[in-house]
Image (cartoon, rainbow over all chains, first blue to last red; front, side, top):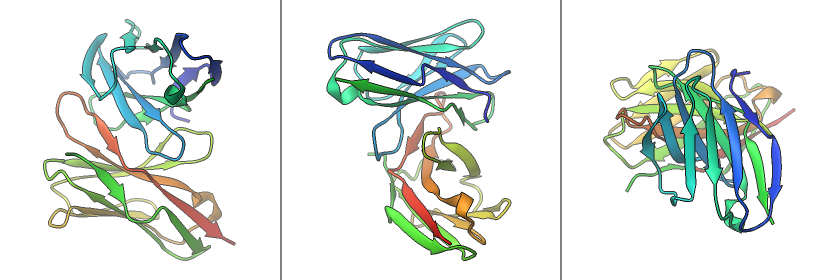
Length: 111
Length: 113
């Protein structure tokens, strides 16, 4: 167990809806990164938050947005859901070192 | 562009044998590499890492080799056990301000009893 928790574990939405996924970082970690993992593929970097500010973004459209709170927990918001957004969403927390600790993920299904 | 790829999508080994999982990367500016293990229904689990100023690093039953000349990374698992069955990813990290990880598509390791 890494100490990183995510909620919910599973979620089903329909096309066009909005979704919010949550992540609690490991104690002492001030950085949270979000990744999208499609079935059978490696995780793809969405963005990273450091001390409540976005600190790097991958190749994802603006309808993917996030927040980090003073306790370093984080949210990932996706608007106008598309079928291709169906994936496992992973968050990872880290501190001053590069090592990122992943949570178990949220499985999102868009119908 | 940047990419991290793997040579074999599936590797099947006999329990007790050694396993070697390979990975190629294309960005010579990458300076940090990590191997992750992902079991079904779980997030990636850190196995071992290596920085670009090293060519070998050993852990418990695992060894990572880095060949910067040919941009190749490998993970060696000694005395493979059934619990090693999982998907293994290599990931590339550039130590810039974002610590973005670039993952390959993964190799599935199957351990035969």
